[in-house]
Length: 174
Image (tube, rainbow, N blue to C red; front, side, top):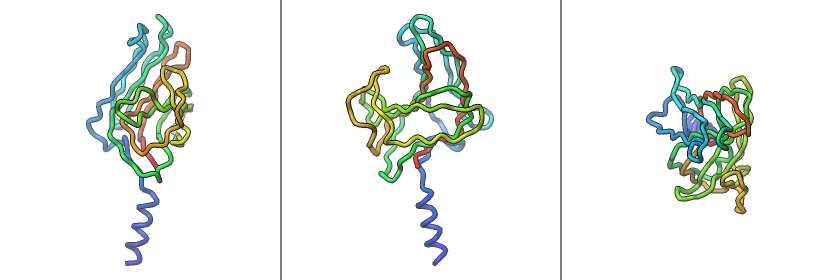
């Protein structure tokens, strides 16, 4: 009985909500590039042989463009003990944004920038540091404090022409 109690405590301490990992199936990531505004940036989101998500492409400033984004509609409800969004990935040394929508009809994103290295790494993004933004402008609402997520996204838009490539192993709430 003592071992069962200890095991249960251990499970509660390591409890995480998995948004993506190698065992996740049938996720329908949607590409939204600057072509929605006349730009010519390109990107794709594919599963590689190691069952990692690979977000790659080319950002172009041509025709007033400059971003590439992949997004995933989700339905995630979690308790307020989850305080971080954690991404295990292999980066390319570039800066990205992770984006969250708390409600399906929400017109703005909660955003948090992160910088990658050229190595495998774990990026920890505190949920309370996601700030509201719409089309690159701050929105006058408090930082993210919900316990729901209706959509997630990864965006690159560093105001320069560049190729990019990141491999995502896991995305969790912890």
